[in-house]
Structure formats: structure tokens, C-alpha cells
Length: 112
Image 1 (spheres, rainbow, N blue to C red):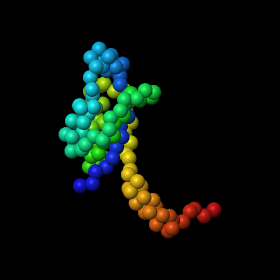
Image 2 (cartoon, helix red, strand yellow):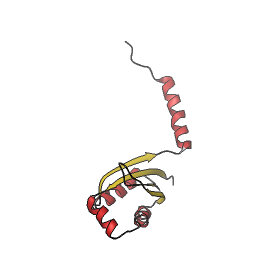
Image 3 (cartoon, rainbow, N blue to C red):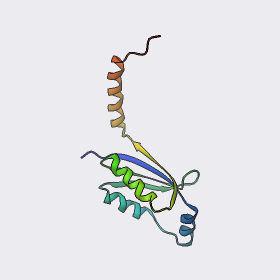
Image 4 (tube, rainbow, N blue to C red):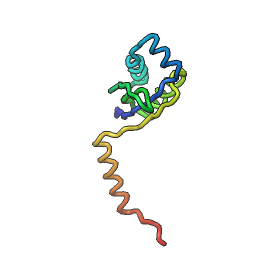
């Protein structure tokens, strides 16, 4: 079964930040377990500063599973902003570009 790659960036709510400061906790294991429950695997988990507080990359079989992970995390009320990005491997991008090349040869621009 082909696995698709995703990246989710998130920003904690002030309440979640306060909870983590008062009781420091490694959240990567909880996220990894959630991804496994969806039939996938986590590739990386990083904390950052700036617009987002953290980012993790993972693999699952389909967009529905990726969206379910995002909804499950958001449903806890601990994040105020999240962004999910579908990633492509270099091989996948090359296949996309080759298909685009074939399609572009037959595509006619509007005539003016």
C-alpha cells in the first residue's frame, strides 16, 4: 500500500502553553500513537518558535486519514491554529512533472 507524506504545523492555545509549562510533557509520543492508530507512522516531530509552536511529519495511506488526525488533535482544544501540507517525494514530483509535460503538449492556450 502506498503511503503519502504530510506535514502538520500547529500553534498551542495559551491554556495548553500554561499546562506544558506547569507540567512539562513530551507530546511526540501521544502524536506518534495517534498516527499509528490511523495506520501510519510519524517521521519527525519538532518544536519551533515563530508563527507555529511545533511541526511533525508523518505517513498515512490517504488524505482522509491525514484529515482525521488533524481533526482529532484539534478536537482537544489545545491548538488554536493548524496547517496540514501534503508532501511529495522527489520521485512523486518527477512523475507529476512528466505527466504535466505530456498534458502540456496537447493543451491549447486561449486564442485572442
